[in-house]
Image (cartoon, rainbow, N blue to C red; front, side, top):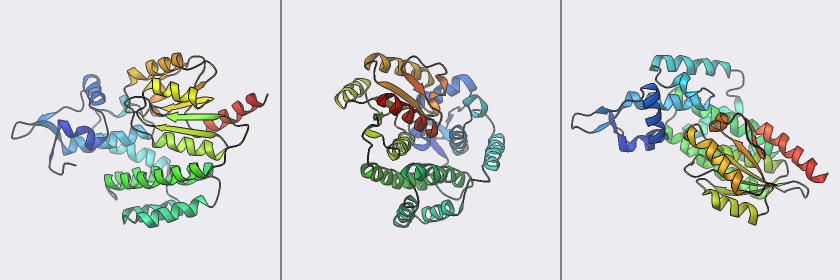
Length: 302
């Protein structure tokens, strides 16, 4: 990671997690972010621009649309961020989340994992995802925005959570009559934590789950779904995924899969798909997918 006052264009994706294609689209539509030239003639971005992009990323994850935040001044972005922070004040950081954050600040990964295991023991896997993992990730973002932690803390936290959820999914006990769901992200989509959380929540409800991970070619996804006899293929699109590609990917996948295999779509990037075609369902949160799981189970029993 660059530590100086100037970040070369070649490193922008590594620094922010935002693709060059997405930033190019924003530049064309909103006039931001505009590259600058350093003293030695290299093209890149200032640290202030990087900070703006990281805050924009947080706001998009918090539910804002690009038109609401891209191109705003740092002061305007800060006001928007403080607004959503105040909205979450009642539930943002309970005592258990605070303890997890303290372990993270100290880079005490053993302690962080031990606390997560303790929290997991207090309820179901689905409750663990909703009541522990989700609030923790929100507070990690807020703590970064307040300058209390660094980006690397977020990566450490993500790593621990992923290991924890993978282990819990392996220990889950599918129910005999429940459907099998295949999870993956489409080509060029590398953000998979949200999908992993959905998989854990549904596994906790009794679903049989199989994961192909991120950046999966659609033809491979089709063959795996057929081979595994999946009832559902679940995919997700992050806000950073090119919006113009979301609908074509879903349409192509629907064409590839047999009609009796449903497609479930989630993630911030799926908001663009307002009217999904037959055999495709769009979800805005995990609770909706749980409802769909129970509905599908009843249909299968019928």
